[in-house]
Length: 408
Image: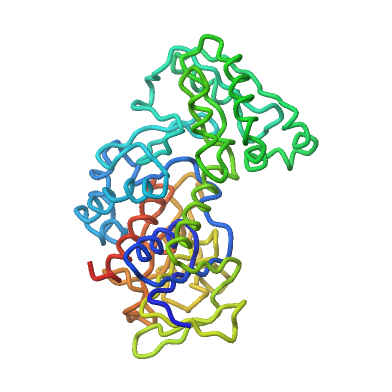
């Protein structure tokens, strides 16, 4: 079976690359083994959160960082395409690359962000809040959102906080088991006429507040329920992130996948690549676990398998390896150099990943595979947590790979 491009990995990186390519007329296949990091989505994407000006921070990164390989001008140009890219799918974000804004974590900590979903609370300052009084509401029995931490963080910034709980018969069955009282299960109940009833209950608990803050537990399959709540609640209504799983993150995953398929892309879920056939410095075809008798051929391939979390790279007693094709990996051979004893220090292993040339083509036995591009967190040379750039690297390197394949 032949495609123009085969993408290995169906998370944020793989889907962004796939969508960009199918929009330009390519016949694409995505092979996805399962859950992606979007299930842990905070509501925000980070470009580089080391300081308020992300482009200034990017200029100071190491030469091996993917942004440095792209170059500041290219990073800025790619970043400008991201909001319109998602808007075409019905996903609207606020923010831009000229300056980071602030968002709040599920535990009340303020962090810089590049783009944040419209329904989430965002802040221009880390310390100055836009409200004098807010209502912080939670679903009764929901343990993945801690109102006490949120309230304490806001009160420390001079905001008066009224905390209250929401309850309804629709939540009672979920409440029978803490394992069922998760954001995704709650979101399945906030549909239809219940959205209106919930909005009425929220209005009864605003208590003269300037805004209402709630955990992001609505809108699993789309934004209609979220928009309805914003319309019916009588004061400004904002979500805050919950602990995983992330309802908006799963929504983004499903919407990206649906759009990719609607545009003619083929998405093979629950499958994994077992081998590749290389000839003359090129990857010619792959085979997968569920289709072991079928060769999937393509002109180009994209590796978007993620880092240690999704087993895009793996560590063992013998070292660090890329398990699909046996690609070269940038990693220290001395295990004692993989980590720092202080857990809060930047950990060296976080920068390990697949080695590439300046065009992000994977290296195998020291030579670039000319039609195999590497994108996202499987790349080497950056620490997504310390640099605050995980989503940015995932999205921008994916758009860049699609441009290279299309010779743009």
